[in-house]
Length: 92
Image (tube, rainbow, N blue to C red; front, side, top):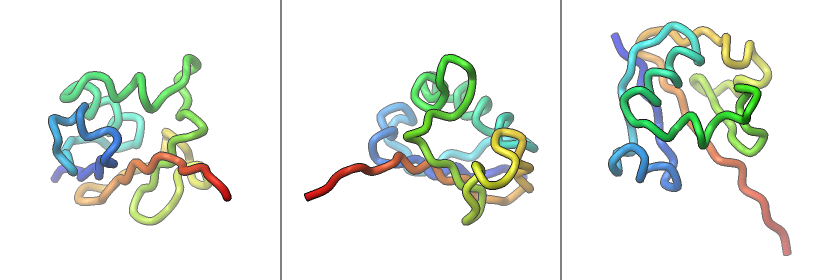
């Protein structure tokens, strides 16, 4: 069974406008690599030069922020949802 990735509006041009994409993978790293293989360009937007998630990109497996789990090594069970959420900054 596949994993569903929720794509934020700002990144949907990379997914051909799709709000969700289904891929295979056991860890977050595998899931995001599969996403980039299907829709090239995601790696450039999600990862820094060292291969870590950019600080301004939040990724959740289910409702859990992967920064508080095992990062890119976080297990992603089949049927689970991964959400990519760009950080929002602003103020008055």
